[in-house]
Amino acid sequence: MDTITPVLRDSNLYRYQGFCFFKELMPPEYIDSLQNFKIKEDDVFMITYPKSGTIWTQHILSLIYSEGYRNGTEQIETSERIPWIEFQFLHKNDHNSRPSPRLFASHLSSRFVPQGLKNRKAKVIYVMRNPKDVIKSLYHFEAMAAFAETSPDFDHFFMKFLEGDVFAGSWFDHVLGWYKHKEDFNILFIKYEDMIMDLRSVVKQICTFLGKALDDESLDIVVKKATFNEMKKEPLANKENMPEEFFDSKVGQFMRKGTIGDWKNTMTVAQSEAFDRIYQEKMGDVDLHFTWDMN
Ligand code: PPS
Image (cartoon, rainbow, N blue to C red; front, side, top):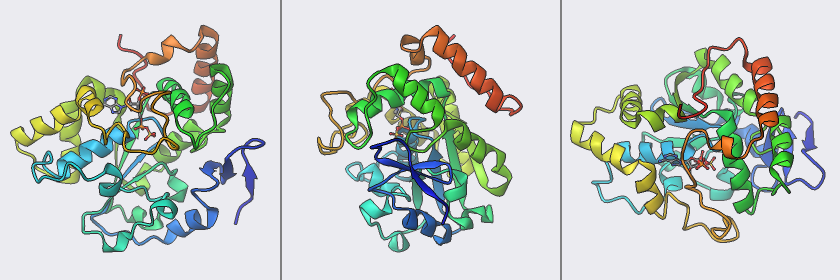
């Protein structure tokens, strides 16, 4: 097993092969065991770096597979429909007894996912978001999530993010790891900003990838129920069912702003320029382009 190091002094994270895991929730032995997790050909994995549109895409997948909840399953928790593979230790789901097609969510980088996913039959949907908005969203999330460390100020958090000293490690490593290994997987990349700008097209793209032919009425229902305003009203989507010791709803809300470009309200010009330089260094030759604001 590779070296395991604490991320920062007193941190609740540990670094393992470049990724940062929660000490209590994700022991390295369990993470290693995922390599041999048995994949079925009709499995679907939805993967994100945190704060990139995870719950949104989970919600969309739930709606697609339940035909807009017309089968009366709206009270089933998203994490039950689409459980996290790396939090098995916490949920103790028996994935083997789940009916197919099994849907999974994960924040793992490509090096940690089950080897069987490389059969290129099981499907992977990777959702990404412009990293400046990820920083802003994660900064707020840290403050409300009891299991994450709260930074004293944005500048401190900004540096921590650039060092990759946050859960899931470096955004650059995560996105590049998946993107550069795309030939290994049967994978669809989607962008948070495209969902904001034309949700219907992205939902259609997801349906095509999954081989789910929804009629126009079902598609309308999925799109309507997946808008920010509709999801904000849904206690389950907004994680209002989570105990206070996990999420402090007095500090903030999970469904916070749901926009493109909110980073501009917090990041200084100097921080933004420093970020651009690092972005250029790390992503320069990669054909990935993000929408940074609504203009
Ligand atoms: S997590 O904790 O990693 O699972 O978070 P994640 O779900 O990836 O990201 C949370 C951000 O997604 C926004 N969100 C949405 N935006 C637009 N429309 C819809 N329907 C939607 N659902 C979730 C949520 O508001 C968080 O972004 P911010 O910028 O903080 O508002």
